[in-house]
Amino acid sequence: MNRTARNSIMAVLAATLGFGASLAQAQTSSPLDRVYVIDQRGEVAMSGAGLCWRTGFWTPAAAAKDPAGCKCDKDLLPKEVCEPAVIAKAAPAAGPSAKPSADKITVAADALFDFDKATLRPAGKQKLDEVVAKSKQIKLEVIIAVGHTDRFGSDAYNQKLSEKRAAAVKAYLVSKGVEANRVYTEGKGKKNPVTKPDQCPGAKSKKVIECLQPDRRVDIELIGTK
Image (spheres, rainbow, N blue to C red):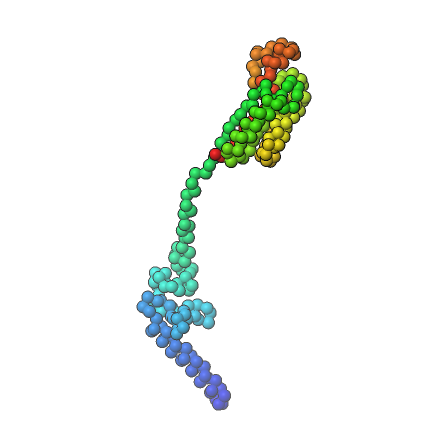
């Protein structure tokens, strides 16, 4: 055996003995509750294959208590040890939120519109001023204005007339400072009369028209929180 080969063998033996000595020193210096070999840096000693070196005290139960257990033998330990359930901190219960309250107002029909008209009467504007004042007493969400007509005329004609009446109410409310996007308008035509079927009988006449005045209205509903 030549000198070079002899020197190589001696170097390998020295390295092996040196690692063994270090490993033995690390193992003997490990705390009793550790079941993995700890090197001089305080880290778990690893094999060339990336596996942790175990001590003679290793058992699955002991590994579960070792700080390095999940790092070294996660697949062998109970799931709850390495993946503890995260206990979410309960959010404080929210206080009762204020629910929007509805206040429905039917403005007197005789104060709003004449027969076959969508122009507000002066008395109707005064009534709507009361609506504006009331809207300022709450945190307004929306005002719903639904227009209606009496029974005379076709369905299509009365539908358009009811929509114009609701639009007239909205225009007035907006002119008094109510935000336009807070006012929703709708027309119901002659579908929802206030008068009963037998209340104003007969053909169109001044008397019957006056009798049907309550049907020519706009129902106004304020929705908001106080």
